[in-house]
Image (tube, rainbow, N blue to C red; front, top):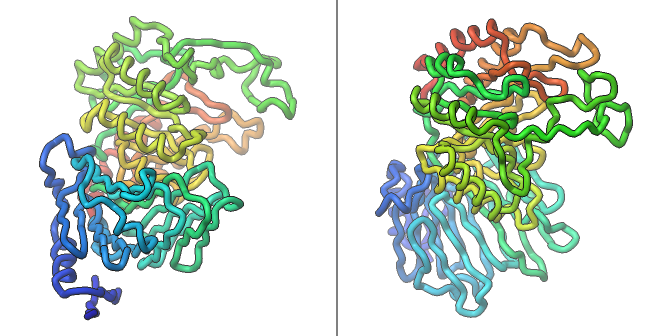
Length: 505
C-alpha cells in the first residue's frame, strides 16, 4: 500500500494511505468553494446541502456544504475535512471491522440526507446529511482521532460528549443525553474519543463546525425584542418608529394570555425562588405564567391587538416572531407552531429553549429544529434562546437565524459567540441589572455597559438585540432600553455595523 506525505495549509502534515488519485480528489474537493450546488431546492436547508456524492469500489465520498466526508471501505475508516472557515483535515473515525462492509450499497432517501442500512442488523445504520452531520445508529465500538488542537474543549460530564473548537471551527461529538458513563465505556484520551462498550448506543452524533456560511446580510439587520407586561402590544406609532431602522420585531411572552396566580413567591422561603420589586409578599405581576402554553396552545392576551401588530409590522416590511417555549414534545411543538403561523401569518418564533429535557435528546431537538425551519422557510426568522447550561449543539443551532446566549452570565468568547461554530447569528442577552436590593449592583445608565458589549460583540462577529417595551422586567434585570440608550445604540452600534471592518475576515 503506497502512502504520500503532503504539507496541508502550511502547518499540518497529513498521511494519506491508498492511491494518489484519492489525494488528488481530496485536494480538489477542498479547493471547491461551497456554493450550495444542490440538485433541487428541496435538498437545500438554510444554505446547507449535499453538493456531490460519488461511490467507487474502495471508497465513497460526499461533499456537503461544510465538509468533505470520505468513507474508506477497505479500512473501515471515515475521514472528515472542513471546508468553511479553514480547509483542513478534522478527524479520522475508525469503525468496527464489519460495519462498513455490512452496509447496503444502495442508498435510501438521498436528497438532504443519505442513509445506509446494515444487511445484518436492521437497527444499525449511518446517516450523513447536508448539515455535515454523521449519525451512527446502534453502534458500540468507534474511535475518533482529532487532527486539530482545540483552543476550547468542553466535555459533558455525564456522557463524555464533547465540543472541540479553535478560532476557525472544529467538531462536536454528542451521545444521547440520557446515557451515563456507568453504562457506557467512553474515554477521552488526548486527541482521541473512544467508545468501547458492550451495550449498543442508540445514536451517536458527529458534526462539523461550522456547517454553513455566516449570513453577513442578515447579520446587519437590527432586531427589536419587545417585552412589556404593562403595555403588552406595541402601538402602531412604535412599530413605525422601529421599522425606520430595524428589520425584525420579536414579541416576548406577554403577548400571550395573562394567567396570574399569586403564589406568595416573595416570601423569603428556601422552597421558593426569591423575587424582588414586590408589594408585600405578593408574587410580581410580571411573573404571570404567560410563558407556557395552555394545553399545548398559546392564546393571545388580546387577539385583535396581536393581529394589529402583525399587520402593521408587515406593512412596514418587518418580520414578526413570537415567544414560544420549546419544552413541549416534538409533535406538540410542530402542531402549535403550524397553527400559529397559519392563523396569524407569522414569520417565525423567539424559541425559549428546545427540548433540553427530552428523553430522546439530541435527536428530538435536532429533527424538530429541521422541521421548524421547513415550516417557516429560509426567509422566516427563528431566534433560539440558549443559555449554555451544558455543552451546546451547533448542528441544532445551524437551523436558526439567531442564537441568544448568556442569560445572567458575562460575555464569554466560547459560550456567547457562534461565528465559525454554528454560524447562526449570535447575540449575548443584553439584560441590565436594575432591581437588585443592593443599589451597587444596579445600572441606571447602561450606555457604558452597552458600549462595551457592542465592542466585544462585533470583535467576535456577534450582534446586539434592541430591547424595547414599557417596564419589561425579569427578576433582577430590566429588558428594555431607555430612550437615551436606544438612541446611543442606533448611532454607535448601527454605524459600526456598517463599517467595512465588520465584514468577512
